[in-house]
Amino acid sequence: MVPVTLLTIGQLARRSGVPVRTLRFWSDAGVLPETERSGSNYRRYDANAVARLDLVPVAPDRRSRFRE
Image (cartoon, rainbow, N blue to C red):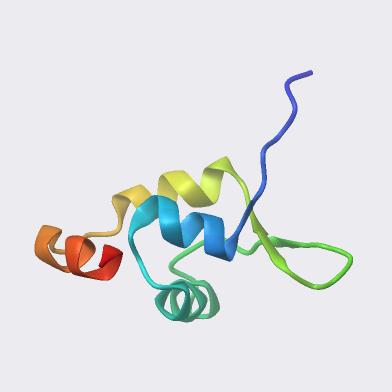
């Protein structure tokens, strides 16, 4: 069986260039699928969430601005 890599919301934010606050909003609004929670109640995003985030349209100039 292939191990599943879970990302924290911070790791997902760095990967996608979308702020953590926006990811939380999208997660609460149902744009991103429900996530697993760690023992410390941290959101843990799997490959399905990453794939879904890749489909969310964000203007390219906004993604680059988020990275600054």
